[in-house]
Amino acid sequence: MRAAYPGEVLPNGLGDDTLRSNGGAGRHRIHTPSGDRGRALRIGRVLVAAAAVASIAVSGTGFVVYREATTGLTTSDALDGIANNDPNGNGRDTNILLIGLDSRKDMDGNDLPAEFVTDALHAGDSDVGGYNTNTLLLVHLPADGGRATALSIPRDDYVDVPGYGKRKIKEAYGLAKADADTQLLDEGVSDPAERERRAREAGRRSTLTAVRELLDVPIDHFAEVNLLGFYDVAEAVGPIQVCLNNPVHDDYSGANFPAGAQELSASQALSFVRQRHGLDNGDLDRTKRQQAFVAGVMAKLSSSGVLANIGELRALIAGTKNDIVIDASLDPVTLAEQAGAVMHGDIDFYTLPITGYETIDGQDVNLVDVGAIRAEAARLIGNAQPTASSTSASSSTASTTPSPAPTTATAPSATGTSGPAQDPPATPDEGVHSDGGIPCVD
Image 1 (cartoon, helix red, strand yellow):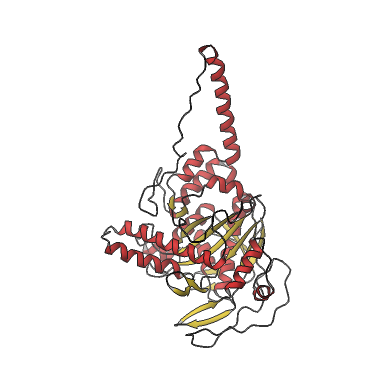
Image 2 (image 1 turned 60 degrees about the vertical axis):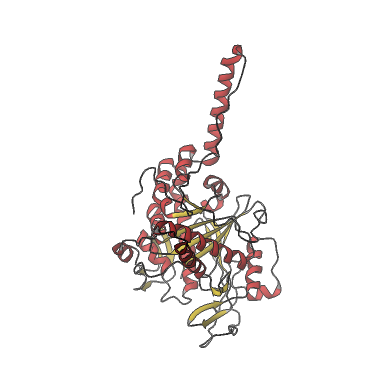
């Protein structure tokens, strides 16, 4: 794992150093008559002590850990100005988009060490993957701290990407990032690291906009992690327990695991979530691997007691925060208070439905019914009831009891397609459900 320097401050997405503080609040003096000064000081000390105890009780970590968690984090303003993203539209509930970036570069755009990428990550080289978002997971946290719901958006879903027309949703980031980089260069921004940081902001905003428009739900916060960040999280938390229904062997990802429950190192965990070759449903099965990994991380955090151990929590924070980007308004302590169920592993994962596969302009894509996706998102994380058409088109249900396999559907035709249409999975996605345990996946 890459070492973190004590007190290291990383630049944010706009090229400025970000230090999270108390908003500039200063000390408040209490003016009392001289005869009452001693009693006032004693009362003041009691109030200060009570406030400190309350702070520790609420956060579970204390002020020192809070400062360590927030100082040096790379933050982003990409959520600002997203069209139709009403911050009050979600009530007191919270939606957080987790973005997994398939990039072999660091925050400044430098290539990761070739031997590390090849040997530890089993991820080719820095020219592979570009800036695709291979993981898009919307986590819904109820305001009462109850059971959470997570919606996975398959990376090859063929959707409207604002400014680029119909594209795979995973391309929203890279397209906008590349165009922004060219524009910044034309404007005379010659420093590659600064261009990288600012261009990535455009990529994030494009991805957030595409997801917001697709699901028609507000996004309150987001977090982004690249391959190195994923590795560091797995290294800091690990080993991670997962469970496979069948043994697998895949030379492409390096996944070579027996069936059953097992613990994975950071390198093995990355192979586990990246495998798609040799799986019946390819990327859709890989999405379930990603969901199972998140469940494994939550189970490990809960069972290890790291969240209640300040020393271990500080080490976890130090080992992961340098490779993670969060939106500037996200308060980790407030989030921890609301995410109680997630921290105990109580979360249901669903993969949003597709209607079929197609080859468009030489690329394999997932065809989707946007109305069905929105209805499914509303059913799972909102108060709206699904329509009859969306129910039949949905590929996920809230029940853990297997449903009868529906009649295999034929993918609808699309303009500009070539090659025969394939069929979507014949059985509905029942979701990956976790109650603090380890769900088994294919």
